[in-house]
Image (cartoon, rainbow, N blue to C red):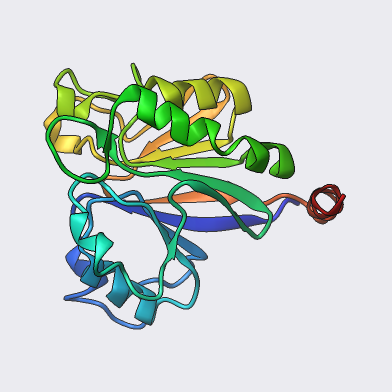
Amino acid sequence: MPKTARILVLADEPVKAYYEYYNEKTFEGIDLIISCGDLPAKYLTFIADVFRGEVLYIPGNHDSSYINKPPHGCVNIDGRIHVWRGLRILGLGGSYWYKPGPYQYQEAEMNRRYLSLWYSFIRHRGIDILVTHAPAAGHNDGPDLPHKGFETFTAILDKYRPKYYFHGHVHMNYGNYPRVSTYKETTVVNAFERYIVDVELPDEDDRKSRKKRRKK
């Protein structure tokens, strides 16, 4: 039977159960935590301090404080492919540009960020999980400029067909947005506040073959 990992995804709104009401069983059964942006650095730092595992994160458009005081004990995967237990996880933070400030991008800028990773895509032979703050264009995005989705993300989904796509930015109370949906072969999860996903891990043969290819 394939091995699975239980991943907790977070975004946009802190969950009191994870800090104010935390207890030793809060993260029981969780293997990995991924923040999809717009969460206070001190919140993620606390989680990293008490959680016995990796906490990955990307910045959202409201995370300008990360520039000087990033979350401690966490792994920033913005703009790179991070491998965890054989899962190839790509992070691309930020939102569509709507006012001066960090972590906001025009479509062409986000596309350049993606294209600059060409060697990483070749080296890792694709990705298993795409993590972004803003959603993909035409899929869970909003009608207004701040919540517009990126065509670049749709292009990544079309080309690499990751098993999962986690994003935040579009709060569930903004409208009739699905928590979980499907785009072609990819399961899409809106990580607003919190959600738990059981992800199948690559088998040992796949992991070994990938390592051999990366060494060549």
